[in-house]
Image 1 (cartoon, rainbow, N blue to C red):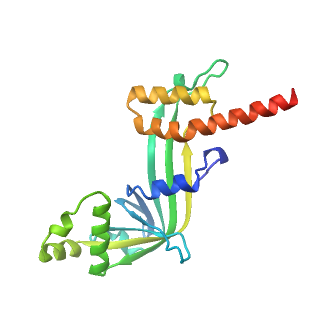
Image 2 (cartoon, helix red, strand yellow):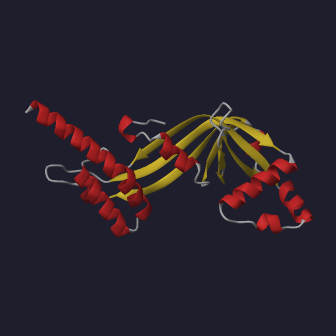
Image 3 (cartoon, helix red, strand yellow):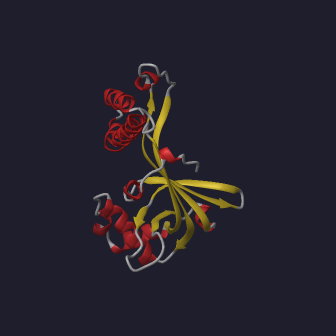
Length: 218
């Protein structure tokens, strides 16, 4: 993924997306070429004493042949995103075109298949619990066994993570503030909140730095 320096994410921002428990695109390459499945994955951080970057765990339907092609894989997570109108970006002396703001995290690694019922049950329980659902725990033994026969566990052992937040943080503070107001007026609250927390302070810090440089050379 192409990530300009001004759209790079901090390690903390990336971790927040990883820990969201959201669904994303699991991409692998099989005999017929690239294959993708939209599936929720749960982030499992590496142990404090261990090496590595952790893993993502989940499951796919047993009839989905994607699990039969383990190996190198990519998982794409999506954060808040919205269409940005040109008028929201325009400031005196600066005209702009419309664009799209978004947050995305690409997780690379090795896909491992788990067909052990105990592993799959633990993964299903943890993924459900992460979303406040304990229905699996209330199921009978036979019901759980039938559920597990229909799925296959998957684990993406992480080797690299790239994060990109194209959220107008390279614009002036005035433009960023206008975009935030525009989003709040059009229902894009999640994107507006992200920008208020991250983009506006970053744009202001850049503006203050440039102002300081100009003052020193004036």
